[in-house]
Length: 217
Image 1 (cartoon, one colour):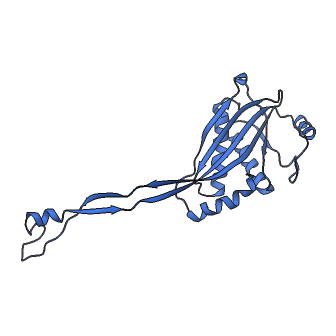
Image 2 (cartoon, rainbow, N blue to C red; image 1 turned 90 degrees about the horizontal axis):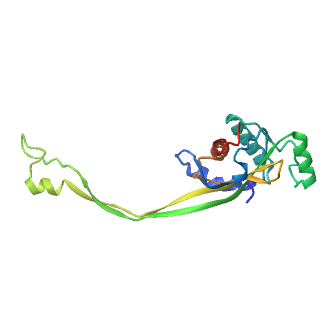
Image 3 (cartoon, one colour; image 1 turned 135 degrees about the vertical axis):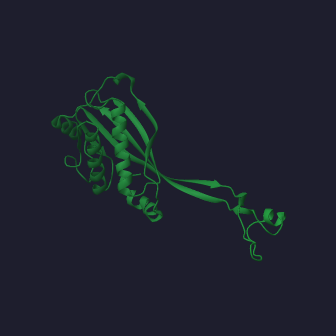
């Protein structure tokens, strides 16, 4: 699924108005063991997307997040065509010209719905009652069973379905020197508050992961 479908996918999320903070986690990742000591000085960020605006915003956000982790990254949209796939030769020439040593590609894998069912519950909830009476009469009067019987009320909670929206992205880091895949990860963002919140959460998570793996200075 291309990133230009984000707007449609997020329409429901925006209607829900989820109050939880947006977080992104990596469900899986792999690091090429041949690149344990590799640090990238300048990374070219490429978001695979059909919509130019979505691509530009994501690449800018990811480049900024990488800079926030001490690295250097350049978005590809000022350099690559917005509406067509470039040839392999043109991409190699661009990479050589820009002096990057790493290429970071990201694509949206899926927008999934996860439905969980919570069964009904029944429990007793304490309560109190005031017993009217004559002067000086009040709480606790009416006999011991009157007090006991009104102290607990049986509460029923019906079962319900809770549906979550999950954004799944794949991010790959390649070495320009060898054209090898150095690292790959699949991230999941659950019930984002908005499109902007999702973009910020995803790009920060990717940049933080790259830093923790030692790929950034």
